[in-house]
Image 1: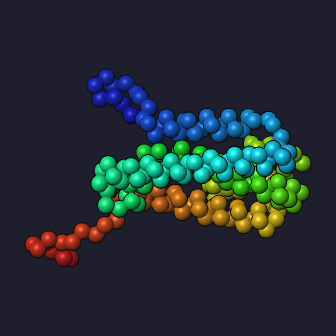
Image 2 (image 1 turned 120 degrees about the vertical axis):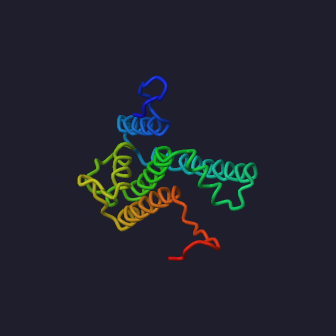
Length: 187
């Protein structure tokens, strides 16, 4: 933890607090005992899709407002600023939940064929566990994607998780090449 210069006391940073919030949410979801039924699974998928659409609308609206307020010439720069403000842990939470809902839908479509290692009526937490583990390019060994759809979704989640993390980390680097001035050595 960083030291506060004036007093020398330790204080958590905003990033540390966001990470703690994400960890608390992961634990809370892991403690949900409710078992999924087909009806509950489709209800969760519908609610999740509506919340995802609302979240995208809010994210795009915030990007547009920031673009106008700061007179940022390119919407992509404003979008990256909004993402940085939200923080990687909270973006990770949204990513985990979105993929969990994909896996819930796959299970609801083919409950006996989609995954091996799940009980007949899995918990939301079981599929959340699968999504979080898969996002770190390490699907769990006790739950296996069996159907082509589940395997494809697993591979796509791994690819998008890697791509998103790479894009997020590269947003901290200035990739714009600057032109050398007239007196600079070009070596």
